[in-house]
Each structure stands twice: as structure tokens, then as C-alpha cells.
Length: 216
Image (cartoon, rainbow, N blue to C red; front, side):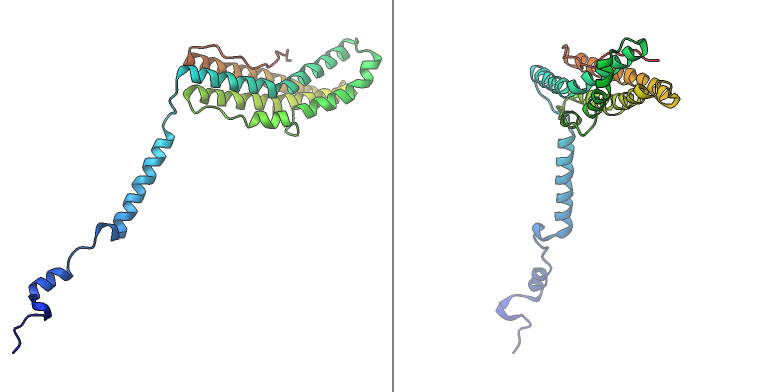
């Protein structure tokens, strides 16, 4: 005779409870997804937090950045001074015949010195800065100096090259005046950036070696 119980002696009530037992937490897909999202968010938040280091380390890192900036900038800074000097001598009539013959080649080299075809300019644009508050200001400085070289200086020297052969070229004269104002503006921005970094660090980092130029 049947006793009304499943094989093994377990009651139907016990069997029902066993069949409805919750799955282990690690088998619940929704929970796993939620945990994964939390982990990703936590990592993202941590990576976005400011990087804390000693003031001495920040100052040392800042000096290293400025040393690299000025090393990479040097060829273009020299090119700008050379081209403007040639132009000034040409305008004043003091450019010698020998210098006049060399001027086109020199200006062509000066243009290359301020373009991305120059390894120094490429390196300048890719300088890595610290993740600190001062480092962010130095990042702004790198952007300002790169713009000074690859846009303002490059454009100005190109105009000077044109004026060497066509002293009365109206388009070149107008553009040169605009480029000179941009050179001054971006130079001022770079010095504002280094001043802001100095205030954060309570130090005096090396300033960007950007020449001062008169502009129309």
C-alpha cells in the first residue's frame, strides 16, 4: 500500500521546499551585473581623484617639465628672433648684400623649426605633465607654448618670408600684425600659467623661454 510519501521517505512538503530553495548568490546574473557596475564605478572614481604627492616632488616634477619645454622650444624661439631680426634690418636698409642672399634660405629653415615636421616641436606637444593641481597648470602652459610656436610663430615667419620678396604685400603685412598680437597674447597666457603653478607650489619654476617681440 502506498503511504503517500515520495521515495526515500521525504514528505511532499519537504520535497516542495527543497525544489523552491533560492539559487546561490553567485549564480544570480542580476546581482553579478550590479556588483560589476559598482566595481567599475569605484575604479573610475579612484582614477579621477587628484594625485597627492609631496610638495618637494611636485616642484621637482615641475622643473623637469619646464626644462623639457624650453629645450624643445629653443629651435623655434631662435628662428623667430632670427626672422624678425632679418626683417628689421631689411626695413631699415641695414641688411648687407651677403645677408640678403642668405635670408631666403634662413627663413625657410626658420619655418621648419616651428612646424610639426621638427622633432622638437613634436616632442613639445607631447610633454607629459604630473596629475597634480600644479601639473594641470603646466599642461595649460604646454598648450599655450605649442600654439605660440606652431600657429603664431609659424604664421609670422611665413609672412616675413613673403615680405622679404614683396615688402609692400598688403595681405602679408595685415596677417603679420595679427600674428604678432597672437604671439604676445599666447606668451602672456603661458606666463600666467607658470605663475599659477608657482602659487600652488609656493615656488618659482623656470619661466618659458619665449622671446618678447614688438607688434604692430
